[in-house]
Amino acid sequence: LYREEQRRRLGRAQDYIVRRRHNALIIEQWANTEWSDMRRHSLQDEAGPELIEAILAVQQAAVTFRMASSMVLAKIRLWHSLHLVDKWWLLSPPSVAGLRKTGRVDLLVSYQAVRDAALALASFYGQERYELLESLI
Image (cartoon, rainbow, N blue to C red):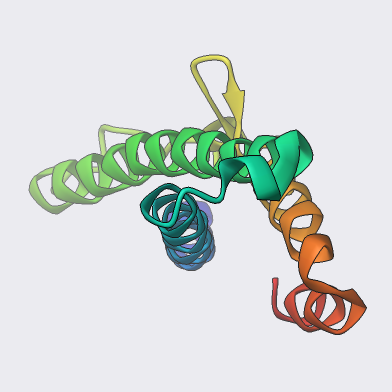
């Protein structure tokens, strides 16, 4: 019973991480587009250092989260694969709470950094854009 519940928890954690990783990818692509458009049209001086810092902060936060979440998802997939061949249930399922951290990166803190950086960038485009993004992430 415990193992089955733990497998369900792992599945829910996997779904949650996949959705957040997708959000981080979209946010990173947005920041990359802003950066490339700014460079293509030589707008760095007009944009100012605050906007440039906001774009770079989004890129850094998103990359950090996506790399860490990919490692956690790989651990979950590995456990699922091992579970399929472990007919006698010799392997205990991993702790879902233990998957929160990988290396020095805490996934919840890291995703919050992505969210905060994205909202900071959105604030450069007005309150309406800020509120729209805030409602979506």
